[in-house]
Image 1 (cartoon, one colour):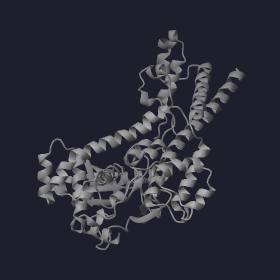
Image 2 (tube, one colour; image 1 turned 60 degrees about the vertical axis):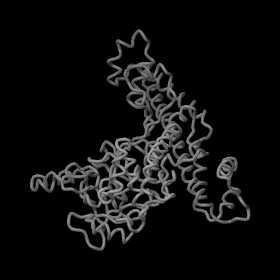
Image 3 (cartoon, helix red, strand yellow; image 1 turned 180 degrees about the horizontal axis):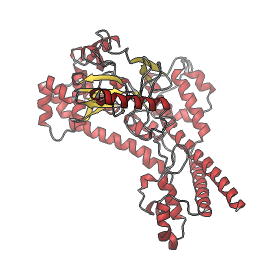
Image 4 (tube, one colour; image 1 turned 120 degrees about the vertical axis):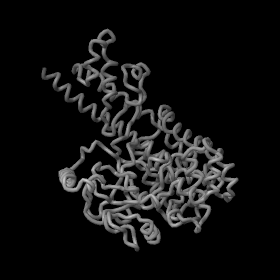
Amino acid sequence: MEALLRWAAELGVSDSPSAPSPSSCLGRSVLIADFPDAGGRGLAAARDLRRGELVLRAPRAALLTSGRVMDDDPRIASSVASHLPRLSSVQTLIICLLSEVGKGKSSNWYLYLSQLPSYYTILATFNDFETEALQLTTFQVDEAIWVAQKALRGIRSDWEEATPLMKGLGFKPKLLMFKSWIWAFATVSSRTLHIAWDDAGCLCPIGDLFNYAAPNDDNSSTDEDRDDMMHQETNKMLDQTDFDSSEKLTDGGYEDVNEYRLYARKRYRKGEQVLLAYGTYTNLELLEHYGFLLGENPNEKIYIPLDLDLCMIGSWPRDSLYILPNGHPSFALLCALRLWTTPRNRRKALSHQIYSGSLLSVENELEILKWLVKKCKETLQQLPTTIEFDDNLLVLLCKLQNSTSCITEMNRSIFEQEFAPFFRFHGFKLDCSIHSKLPVRLLRSLERWGLAVQWRCNYKRTLTKCIVHCKSLVHELSLQQNQQ
């Protein structure tokens, strides 16, 4: 890592507006740190940071792009050009990435490539056992498992299309394997940053060490954050050029100064993890593209089975009818239910009131709230496992990943029925004489299995929150009704 930081500094990467130190590109604004419960390795504030303050800049020469690789290697440029326009920008970047990996220490990017993860947990890497663990009900199979299977089919098709080109370039047999393509795809999917001139994006050494923070409506801005904004507004008047580089207060982007610049999205105290928002994603989307999910994701959307006539009523699209992470029905779902429970001969007259989000009557509101409680309860009852079961299973999966004796943990477990098909799927026989950790391939599978269980557990928690929320409103409205 120290060698990587020196190499990045030589390329001009710096966490300061001034020239980087020759010994390291970090240390003035951020430092590499470990956050076991929040993303693992990441970047911590080296000092107190203001909202919108520059925390990292990387010149174009430091960005790994397909254009940069092809400029350095005419053979790849010629081969890719002969296969255009069939190759997508992502396929091209993957080919360039694998080409650099194949060069080993002779690659200009060797120090960066050697620090990349050896495996990923994006949805496309899930095997059949792990994918089936996403299953909740028949409704959810259509969403989670279908997304996983569709992603894998698309990646395999891209690999098959690119293989003749890679063979022609003399790629090593190992790099021609689908397993290598999946690794490269996951690298591109989970680590690239947006650039205007290439849809595939760029790999940014050091910049891809920032972990994710879910974007929200900025309602969480503190008084100190607002002070920072006022401070920057003052800077705008005093020094227009200096302010323009950070006035957006966004996480960053490639700017006119020919650098990729990243900014603090809020005020950070020294030692806190500095996070970046990649975009607005549900947990399933985070799992699909980045290989992780959040316990508390403000952008999560939970769908429940709905009658076809309810889905078709009004002008709300189907994907807007969901339950929020706090258990509240979305605006569209609430309005659709109000219209759905209104007698047909009165819907047209009341549609304006409903579309504005207004409550029609206490009776109507009680009806839809009770319907939601019933629907969420029915959905939970149809699921093969409970929240308590999933929570306990997650604890055991974590223990197995960190235990030096899987036999001891298994003997204490009440989940033998769950683990029997897991071991059968992997063709692994648990030898009672073995008191060591499980093989690496099984430990990685346990990690992905844990993500699947965590996803389905979050789904159940949101349904439970919806029940509690609706019951509370039913109680309040019933009291009002009785008082009248």
